[in-house]
Image 1: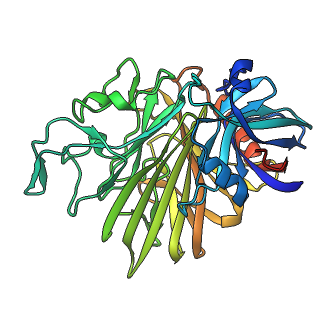
Image 2: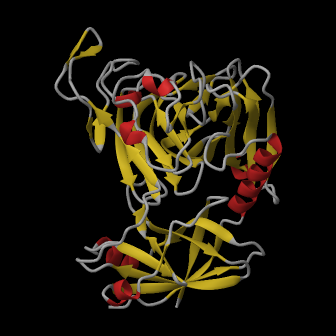
Image 3: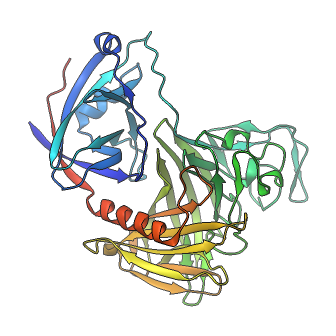
Length: 424
């Protein structure tokens, strides 16, 4: 027997993504191995969970040809392989379940037979669409017809805003709670799609141009004004007076790293990011999980980078407040009020580990967290909570309660899992 760490990436107030198990499916599928997952805390942990993989386990799962799924008690969940540290290696397996307080559960890992049909609900999505048949002239993309979906893109040199080349101007990612997009040009800022439905909707957003999603539709709308700010959770560098987004680079690559039932990811490579008098290479990995409002941002620099910052836009009349987890290991800056483009309530927040020694600051446009010391890796989460989402948060008190539970759960981020020998 061997002890491994199980990391819990938390989604609060969730509905289960799993399905009651079908005994016929279990009998006709191949069990690869099982794990015993222990939750030693006094609260149940619900959400998408990560299991670190040994070399043998990773090989077994990577070589599987059928769909992977997990059986937890009498429920089935998708099982997906994922990279959680931006090194390009799928080093963890993720599944969704509830681990009761002060107890353990057996998680059996299966490979479905070739003829098995498993109707899991898709609760996350990541996408990137652009036109293909036009041409560049005077810095604009002319013609090009319809948008087509791609897994990756090297951003064309000189690419700028409103060129009508990329659908809604960059990659998008969503859960059943909320959607996000980022501008894949000199702005490199994150925006928010407020959702009134739990269905995946981004595939239909922006196909008719850049204006339609700024107006309310059955699915929702763009609800955040970004302008020259960091929007929500965008990557920046603090020059001592203001946050500078990833504006000047040698080149940029974007890839849809995962488009799964319960986890989706967008990965970016920024080559030669100019910060003051120096340049650095940066990898950004954005992750969203089922039933979660949060995007996890993981940054990996080629050389340690000082004064990395993030934050969100300052809205007139909206106060920023700070919160901390029960043990002070995670902190947050947040705001709440009538700050959506639908003229209703929305909460914005950035959550970050105390170990990165973030300093709370502000400039003319943004509430900021600045990581002053040189860091080779930076981790934080950002989120938006719009009151019109299904079962949405509608008051400041509810938003603070949600943030407190989220911070507390991030601090309870590991338990021991006992892994059996791989079964043939």
